[in-house]
Length: 151
Image 1 (cartoon, helix red, strand yellow):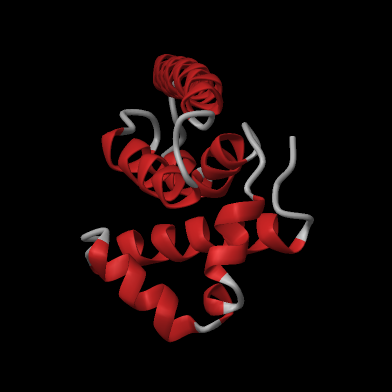
Image 2 (cartoon, one colour):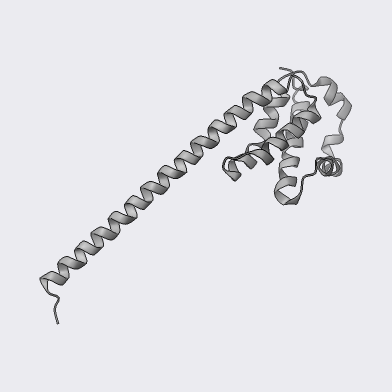
C-alpha cells in the first residue's frame, strides 16, 4: 500500500501551498501591525507637542484633565494610549513652572484617598480609567517632588 508518485507530488504541492499561504498571511499581518504602530507613534508625538504648548496655559489640574481627555480620545492602539498617560501629562506639566500648583497641593497627592476623590471628579470609570487617572496624578506628584516642574 505504498503511495504513488502522483500522490507524493500532490502532498508536496499542498504543503508548499500551505506554507506559502501562512507566510503571506504572516507578512500581511506584520505589515498591518507595523502600520498601526507607526500611526500610533505619530499620534503620540503630535499629542506631546500639542500638550506641551497647551501646558503654558493650563494649571497642573488642567494638565491632568488634558492628559486624561487625550487618552479617552486617542484613536491609536489602546495599550499604547493607556501606557502613554504619564508621558502626555508630563509634557504638559513641563511646559511651565509648577511651583505654585505644587505648593497648593502640599502633600495631598501622597494620599491615595485624595487621588481617588480627584479621579472621581474627572469622571474616570472602570479599572482602565481609574488606572490612567492615578498614573496622571503620580506624574504630577513626581513633578512636584522633582522641584516643582520648572522648565
